Length: 202
Image 1: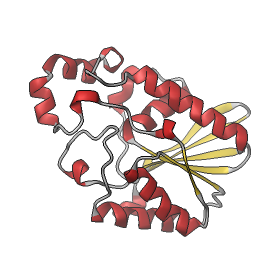
Image 2 (image 1 turned 135 degrees about the vertical axis):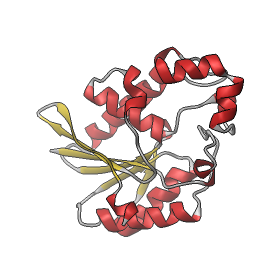
Image 3 (image 1 turned 60 degrees about the horizontal axis):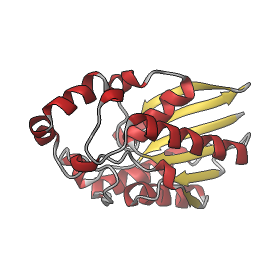
Image 4 (image 1 turned 90 degrees about the horizontal axis):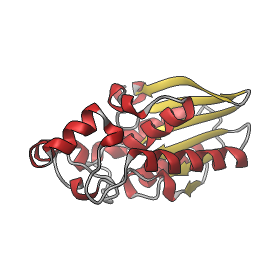
């Protein structure tokens, strides 16, 4: 049985400031570094043999700390990057609501219809993420695989693997350094755990 550990990166300063990061390459905060260390402690007994990460610094740094704890090398995959948020990147949530009110309204109510200037749409994000994971699973069938990525990308991936409509995107949350687990059983992806943060909260 193939078991996927889907991990959101640790906290960054922009997370704390409620700024949209997207593909902007932001470092982990001190809290984020500590979260990654706790993540490694939590997963050390899970027999993970494969570790992939987005190539953005906040994900790769989280994965590197995890990999050191697990003694597993990190492989980067560009398609695990966060959604490109175009003109929203670097803006805080309140500014986005004020300056892009109509697009923001769609993003909350009907996210598949939202077109962010200069950015990706959710279908594009989901397509690249699911294709990346299908390729990784083909290479590592039957193994325990950890993947460190980003909030929106992971939501799109989870919904894609489970066949859930992207319109429900805002109905789930994925916190920094959370673990969600999906297993491949008899050619079907099954959700085993969502947004587990017990290790972060101590």
